[in-house]
Image (cartoon, rainbow over all chains, first blue to last red; front, side, top):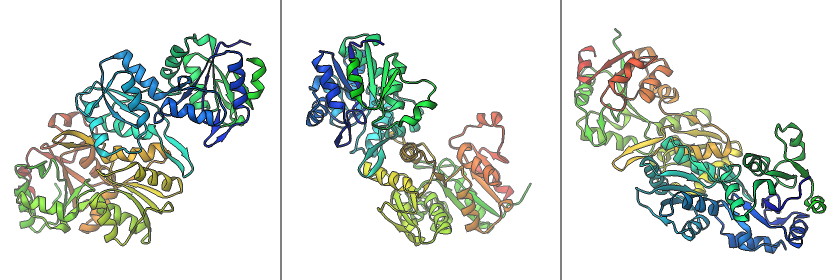
Length: 257
Length: 257
């Protein structure tokens, strides 16, 4: 059993469920904090800023500052800056992605000769935004999507997620995007870079096998699965590649921190 | 060589190219008209009404009345009415599809318990329209899409077509739509029903192998291909299933009418 020097932690289904806290989440984070173990919350949400995510955690009594939060927007912006610090980006997306790109010094533009097309969830999306994105991709822009989630659970039911909005551009142009969020490795690499630890020193914690646990597996990071969210315990047996560890409540893990 | 009793004719690339008439198209339709051979124009355009399409043809001197036009909207509305004359339809789409559904006596609704979801090209599409469509499909509505064209040629370049907008709903819900337009057989069956001829008595004329000619092949209708639009003559040799006939200019066919 490793003693991990840092933790990457999922939010929805792991720390809270929509508007309700998850039992044991606060105590788990308190234990990390008391032992001085660094942690980052890693979310596929591209619409929220680090501040907003951190405020939500604080409302549940979970210790977090904006710097503890890695959104797909932040990972996307950092990824693009590393490729081209002067990049001009055509964007479909909300506040989170727009702010993250600007904070990394990148230009957001409606021109048709952009270097990157970035697609994140956008509840104000228009045909014209899709049109501009398609024209830019056809003109050679690198096509990035913050995350591939096809739907979002809401009080109204399952609504279209960013993966489905992204498909307008990929289906129309025939070009597949680079996805940044879980289960892809890119967001994990950016998170490791921020927490300044190696993959061997870090544990990825999450409830969703197909995003959180797969992201850990894909990036070569050990995983801790919890059954408080999307994936039920009954799924575990049928999985070919299992999580490194699992618990039913994060309190069970505290003695191992 | 058959003598065909009726003709189904594509528009863009066959009768005109965007805003320009195609040489021989007017003379070809005149010859049909003079010999009293019935013809219908069959288009995957779901946004235009029969009147608007007919007016455009008249501007090029091509003989047409609204009744000579079969749009995917009309075929969609007729298809739904045959399945359920009292159907309540949740619609993403423009004037053409809205008018066609209403003219067939169907109800257009934003409710979440609709019988059908209908997706056609919609340049005023919103996230809320996608959301309503996804909720209805998840609630069991039959999912129909007017046509699968992934892009539309415009003066600005290739813009998103209905096939790419439709993918938001299919990717998010995991449900594949029933496509009505070419190359599917449904629009051809509706056209045969309107022209009141059998498939053996009818010839399908078009420029696009993947939509027009495939539609004829899929529906068991003989095809006449013309190289004035999308598919170049050079493609012919490599095609496994070839069109029944081909000409370089529709004037060449007049003596065979």
